[in-house]
Length: 404
Image (tube, rainbow, N blue to C red):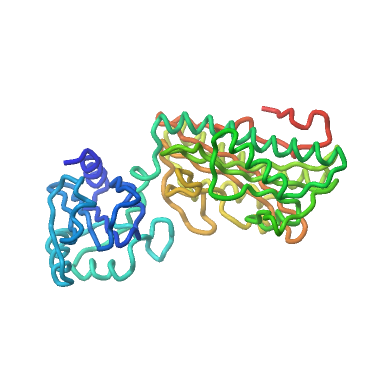
């Protein structure tokens, strides 16, 4: 039996359920593919099911014409072909259990976990089995990084921060020379820096002046981009990873002001989100130092309540942060009790963002973002340190001297 199944069975046994059932149809369950290490080009056009009991024999239910894609899984094989034989196979294998976990989230509470269609859940329940969410089980097998990934990600985070500062430096030079410069120009410059450092990204980065940044996911394009002028607040949100298999994203946001002295209202807005960010980070640090559990929703709560104390809570319109993995939005616990109620625990070996923001429509958007890595030993790391403490005054001679 493959070593992954021994780990899966141990996790199932520890959870107190009878079995974990992985189901897929045409790659509808990418989480299952990741756990089973199926190659992206595996030819799977028919339903399959993997049943991992707490004790006993693991089973794969596969179509007669598609046995090859899962042939590397050295577990008992049950073959089906007709609709009736599928139902019979599933019923006979899982009918012995009382409670099983699947990639399902009650009421769609955590969408990233919800990968099995409602009809299949209905069918499984019709067999007489209770279905619960595999949300907590999933993290260990889809979100945990290796030590090599953690080390590599720390290098990526430093390179990403350098790329963001290169973008601000390019902007500063253009503005001080009197040249016209757009958000898109700065974005292209950062892309060039990515290429020089062998970094890749799925989109972005976001380069946005105040009114545009009030739309949190605005990003300039060749056809839609604003000219950056003296007195503008400029936000850069960039994410990238090494161009290598298994590379992990880094994701950070910094804010600057095109002038010598940052206006009081801008600095005050930044201080509000900085304090929320720092409260969230402190909660995580204290929890792991004390050996306490901390959930994604807890991190969101403390960040949001800190910001609400300023009277600006209604301007914070998104979750506090998200899990990060080989995709910038990973499968693990999000820092969220706002858009969803993510009650998953933050576990060792995972990484996530903390990124509160304030958004005033058509006027100002301001955000700060750091990445947090929980090392395998429970140490809380911030690989992109030093983190932003104040808005960068781009025209100052010391604009890029950052307090640790």
